[in-house]
Image 1 (cartoon, rainbow, N blue to C red):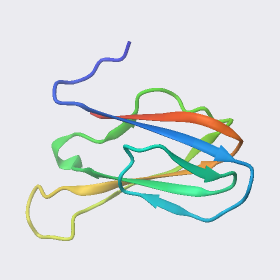
Image 2: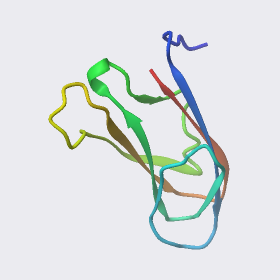
Image 3: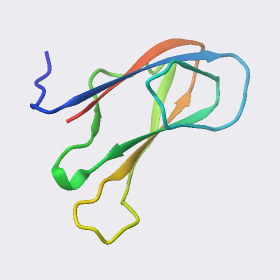
Image 4: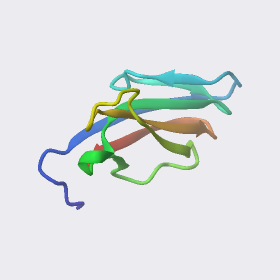
Length: 107
């Protein structure tokens, strides 16, 4: 059982991967189920603020027979305001047929 700080948030994504090739996709509303094709890269964009010490992290290991994490990037807010939230962009690649959950915690 993982320890979760007070104030943490959870996000669970349901992903289904099919055999055809497709294109790159960006998701800004990841609370819904979605499907991609094998070979596709997709990016989940979530509001984040690393200046508070919080960021999105995996709660459980990915099923790497279906999906793998390619890149995890924090993009700062386009403002001079101190403490303004930016966004975390998690890019994955669909590597095999199947379905899986991607569970993230804001901790």
